[in-house]
Image 1 (cartoon, rainbow, N blue to C red):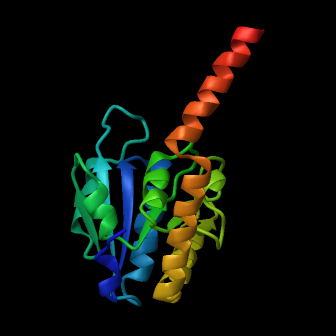
Image 2 (cartoon, rainbow, N blue to C red):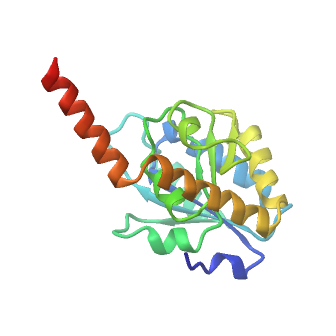
Length: 192
């Protein structure tokens, strides 16, 4: 997989998803505030979908805070996330709860390491120290410390985390494996 992210000493984090408090965006903002003075080479891109009808939606003031943050770029909904992932070092998903997070699956399939909250769904996909790092949900301090941990590892360690994630996807989540699982479920239902 070709990537531009290996050529720069900057560390680019990315979040992909709806702009909701339940996705841990307040904690992510607080973590970026903690990092901004000590890590000049760190940036966060947020590919965010506004969901104003959701009770957990960020307020317009909070969205403006993200837009005005010197280390955060807020990008409106895009059709193709691959170019953004290609130019990122690590996906962050600080969610309070998840099913099986698609953004994590997509990042892992592109050999992008993941930092995620240690909640069901995220912890199914992210194995701490193997393909990324887990942190305590709802804790900006834990998230910040985990981001610092990622920043401190070298390029080869980052590459290995990404490769491990890709291998995990190929082994457990390829289309052929998912289709066969569905066929098995259907056959079992027919036999009952």
